[in-house]
Length: 172
Image (cartoon, rainbow, N blue to C red):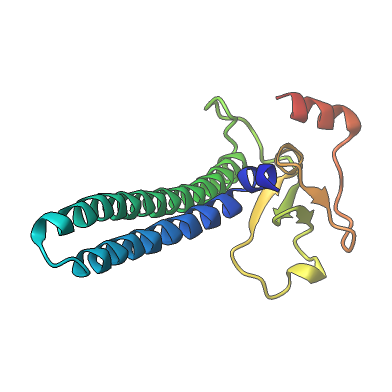
């Protein structure tokens, strides 16, 4: 169970937030108990050990909990930014392929290649029934669809790259 918690980033974020809140709550409880212990003594010299030890321990727990909360927030923001960066990278590569530029920046004549519509995991023909009513779809070449690991739609059955070109695309 512990190992699966560290493999899944969402679980790590939840665990950090939960531990942070537990530490903060425990810190306030320790401070409250220290004040309660100090209140039971009638003279100041007997109250000081309660206030110092309980106060420092409670403050330490609160700072630790706040740090855990901060780190879990940073982790969650990093996960969101990483997913946005991956999405932006995919869109940029699709646009460059559509415009006819290779990955190294050299232009190429891509006008004679078959264009298909790219989905999240599948590519379609432009007149596919599944795509009706959807907006913001992007056309890519068959080679680009193979490079992204997209599979052919089972409804409209778009053309597929020959095996030799598929192996070349995966090597590049």
